[in-house]
Image 1 (tube, rainbow, N blue to C red):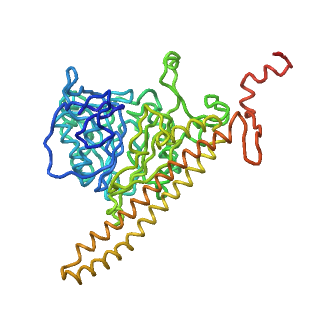
Image 2: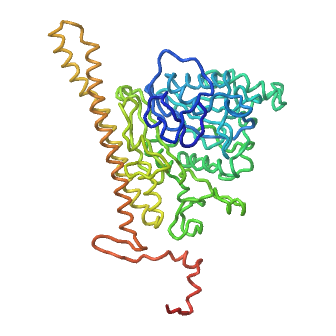
Image 3: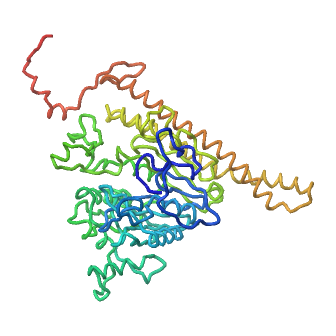
Length: 527
């Protein structure tokens, strides 16, 4: 099907999900092409893109610029069948390893054609693809004909960290190093046809230098986020925050080794980063654009901004994010039984609570599964996060403390829940063995298979009950927080049950740059 990259992303019954069934004013999508089916597919969790499957293959997506574009089949002059949306879904259904996912997506795109979203961020795509043992960076763009694809993948060392910030990052591609690189033949063939590279140059082909179309929107839109993420995990390197041309200069590595072991909390914190404590801090005191109370949001998609012609810093944490998540894959027996974990955060990371779900859950609760952007819904986790983020911005420098306290409390509880689930598997294995021995006394049949089946089923039932209750608690917590913020900061005051209507006023720096001093001479208007 065509991937519109907006609501509704699919309408029809083929996926057997009620949320996708046609509404009264909708018609089912019509396929724009077909590929052969396979005998067996894996279960997986998705948002717009496939996120993580039962084999713990996980994917994160980042739209990029590219030097070529293509039009999807079903549109005028359309030539390409597969979007990154569909490629990730297929990979989730069919791949049991990150390497297999990369090869599958690349080969299908070569065979059937690839088209990008065509947004301001570009016509190409970059994915982070992981499993319990390996991680790859995957880049893809259409080829010049629009009927195939150019793609490359580089393995990330096991102890490394990488960031994908809406721009290609793979540099020198070595097709002879098949352990660390997977590439389409078109990578080198197209570059030679265009005169952009030759083996006679004596250098490896620079994938980003040749196939990226540079930064999206404006200079530093992409690179500043790369600098910030690397600076957070390896501050001693003191990587530069300025550069000439990100496409050409290559100021940042493809990946690097963090100075400390990273946790789930490190990643959720990074998702919320708005350059706090740096010279680019969007909420810093004295930053006029943030207003008196340090609002980090910078709207840019309107007429006046286009007419004036400036730009804002693009931070990692962003008000217009539809969702973000952290996937965790592990060889731990509990993770294998659960099918891997995703900590999912609907709406902006700045207001959400990252809530864990495992792939082998029977169903996702309606609060996370059903609601959408076009209808306000007080049962929705998405709208709870939107509400909290927006009401906290009324007095953010104060309210952010309440938001962070709630996020930390609920996310710490979620992490503790996951740890308890890992430890509880052994208990259910013991129960399963006892049940199997009882069956053996009755049936006189081997008990090994029964032991595994019974213990896993009991564990998953216990885990599912705990996960669903935790999701309900997270949703209720956010809605409660929004009410607490409205009460506490209503009408410009700070209100505590024991201390109502405490006036905190505006910060001194803001008063000095506002119209406040105009009225210091004692002018009066009586009404």
